[in-house]
Image 1 (cartoon, protein in one colour):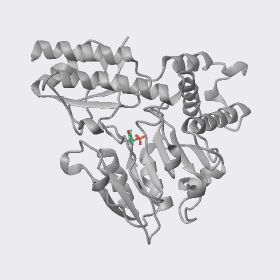
Image 2: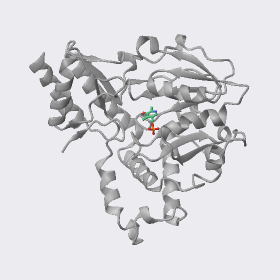
Image 3: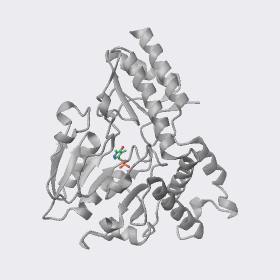
Image 4: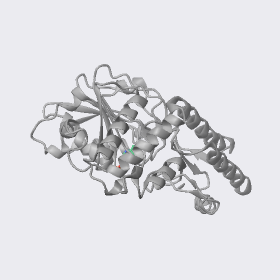
Length: 359
Ligand SMILES: *Cc1c(COP(=O)(O)O)cnc(C)c1O
């Protein structure tokens, strides 16, 4: 048995995997696997519809919002967003908080005019911008932010006030990890492989009126309106990934919803941040306390030479996936929804003992 701290694809609830396994060869008495079924079948249409409606219910959005299940990852969204919503005579505002928002900006810059409305890069991406550090354009086509920076371990805990400017968020690594006022967002998106299910599906939740604005000059497959009109069945969807998302959504409800899950996630994050703070300088947290991510806990060892030993001893003790992203190094514990308090406690204990031995 291992404790899985992978950043993505990542840990899934054991109950979800067990149900998928039980269903794998004979989906509900059909004599076939869902993997072998048409996406036009009644069975898959039911999966698609229930996953959409459960996601909307968990996010508290109504009939003016639509859920899409797409492919291409969050990375394709970086391009689709400006293609669809950034016309030639407009500008889009980007709030930079780490590697993923930089990537979103870079892709948009190849397609239209972009502005950096705030950036915490100069400080090494340890915080999100404070309200007085954000200078939005008067009438941008949209404002884009990354709710949780998976690599730097920095998270928005209070949304910026964007007035009536359309707000778009990459929520790949913290969607459904805490209660969310989704009605603030014109569009939010997430690659599924962190908090929602396996890789292969990307979730988009957006105001229907906002979705339909794209010009006809971009390819149909890249237009949100195409997928909205076809109810995510324009072409073959990632059907098994959507099925696992559905099982995960049911699991979240069975765990009594986002408020309870948010509390649990906060507790687990605090367990690890306490282990860092208690070490009096043996471990150095990357994020400033007010912007600490509850999903990706990033830190270094004061003595860099100890990091390799830490990671290899952790791995031998059953703590998997703790190496920081190759671009920043250090240690990263990803504690998505399916992580348990027991896992966080075990890692905090390991950290304490390691610091005692080496400190
Ligand atoms: C993982 C991640 C991405 C990239 O997702 P892909 O599905 O690999 O394209 C983008 N943004 C954030 C915040 C992520 O965590």
